[in-house]
Length: 232
Image 1 (cartoon, helix red, strand yellow):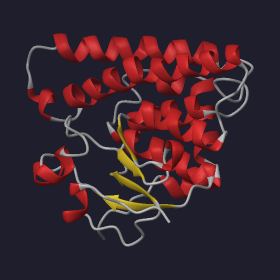
Image 2 (cartoon, rainbow, N blue to C red):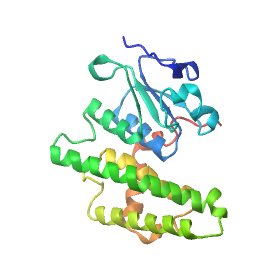
Image 3 (cartoon, rainbow, N blue to C red):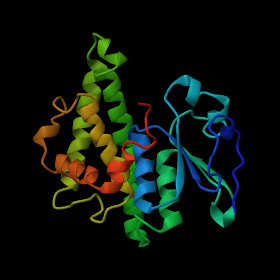
Image 4 (tube, helix red, strand yellow):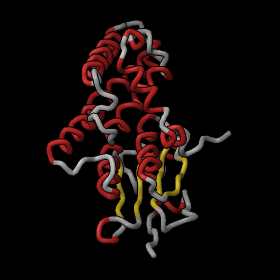
């Protein structure tokens, strides 16, 4: 039986060290991976890592992710039966898809197109929407100069339009449900949390809102949106 060896267990002990260990928080990036784990039926143990410096900048967490961001995983049953430790949600999604053979086509053309849309989220939707949230809802909203806020509003509108066109006549980004959807849809949902749906014209779109609703109607995603569970 696989065993777990890592400094992070000093702060987040593993009750089931033979299982895949998830260290996360239910933000869009966190939900990506919890959704994948739930959809793929992987046996795992979830650990709540808050976004506070006391957690993400702790020596124990930095030993797993030197970039101090959630999510991260340890799989004691990695390639060739060896333990593997991963951070960056996109890399984790690809790893889990390849581990299980699910939600990432084995057809080379479809596979690379799926990864293309995953990278579209990682390099575009996530960073741009995250900055929108900062400048529209959080500390940046206090800035009198509207330059940064307008930049991220406009860039978010542009990205939404790309997705609106992509989803024309499709239920999912790649026709078949895939890790690209697990990456993209949680970030689209974040616009509601940021209170920014109106300013980016979300409700003027047809395909994107229906897509998000379809995604969150999936039982696995409905479970994943609260994994790891926040304190009551």
